[in-house]
Amino acid sequence: MADSKMPDLVASSGHGGIPRDPLFEVTWHVADKENPRTWPVWYKSFIVAAMSFSTTIVVVYTTMYTSGVDGIQKEFDVSSKIIVLLGLTTNLFGLAFGSVVLSSLSEIYGRRPIYLISVFLFGVLILPVALANSIEAILISRFFGGFFGGTMISSAPGSVTDVTDDQYRALALSCWSLGTMNGPVLGPIIGGFVYQYLGWRWINWLVLICSGVSLVLMSLVKETYAPALLRKRTKKLQKETGDQRWWCRFDHEETGFQVLRTNLVRPFRMIVFEPICVFWDLYVSVVYSVLFLCFVAYPIVFEDLRGWAPGLAGLSYCGIGTGTAIAVTLEPLIRRFIAMHPRDPITGRPAPEAAVFAVCMGSILIPIGEFWFAWTARPPIHWVCPILAGLPFGLGNGLVFIYATNYMAGSYTVYAASALAGNSIVRYGLAGVLPLAGSKIYSTLGANWAGTMLALIEVILIPIPFVFYKYGHKIRLQSPMIVKGLENGTN
Image 1 (spheres, helix red, strand yellow):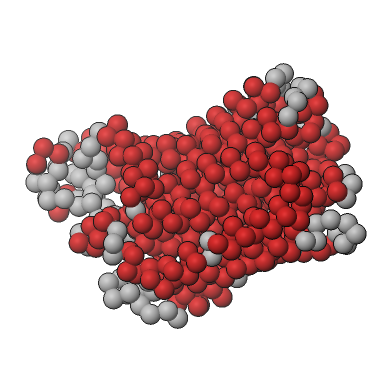
Image 2 (cartoon, rainbow, N blue to C red; image 1 turned 60 degrees about the vertical axis):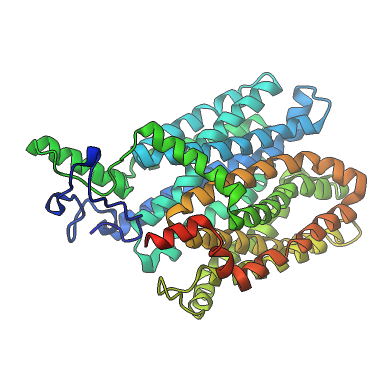
């Protein structure tokens, strides 16, 4: 049978109103070898690992750039560091748009061809940065590199879901996220040593080598998207038998352009008109932006104030990385707490709000870590204190990102991809802008008060997850899209 989690698109008639005979429906058979859910465990594990590595490289490339900002500024004689930091901004903007456009194309043509083309072009677009002779070349190339890297951000979790059964899905996604969640932190750690000993251009050469490995791995990954596989099987049967009555429930009633247009417009509409998306996009975006602001703040604190070399300063992110890793390893325990919540009478599973309790914990831990870092940043306080502040900060960020995503996906189900795409647009958009002001904020207010201001903003937003934890079920019923899904029996 086809995946029960897929949207139920079975219609009583096909193209042009031609009746669809159930006897000619193309679906999975028992123990069907082409069904990704029946593939060997070793191959499923390889797919999860390949997706994790490839996504991690994209995220690492985003933040590794900040390690070489000083070198780029000196080589091209750029007067302002903010101009050089635009390379971070353009890359994040590229990720935002790429994740929406390329994920939509994958629904039309399947995941595999989009992966191969995108990973290849992502690597190609690193070359103009590594060989750049102007800051403009870097800014433009990083935007388009981010655009094609966006396919891993948006589609890789879907591929992991494609090949895993329900009972192992949370474990598989946790394994996938272990690298990707720590990607923003790994970038400055690796980049700091590369810049110190080899220069800023080698930051790009290293990522280019890794992207080549990623392309090899992705070429070994078969198509995992069930609708694409079933559509392909349908066309094959129609061609072999000459009988056009063969059909599958994922046949497109619209043209490719119409599907793409719908998938591109829907995320933007949800950003504005869906109450859940409005508040969660705001909250997650602020949290994510403050995380990216750390890639501006940490060099100021550890290099400028404490006089550390770039490589050593990169190790200061280990606190955040460890905290994020703890959030991932806590998944089995948190899953038990989620299972203890009351069951939704419609789905028979814990309501989506059950996952929000983890976000509530994260919302408290993040400002604790930020306050801690702000008031231990300056000497003569020992350097281990601000690094340890990264533990609650990283743990809180991990909990927010993982379980806010679960909540939005669980709330919208059929429209989850659009909800998460809209969240990516706002998240990467704001995260791309805020770091530009980071240097000015820290130079004007100082490390203590700049960190305090950010922590206070996060404190002000703490009520958002708590309100949704308590009243989220009522808010969901105010959503036109969710109500429509319930009426159609798809949610």
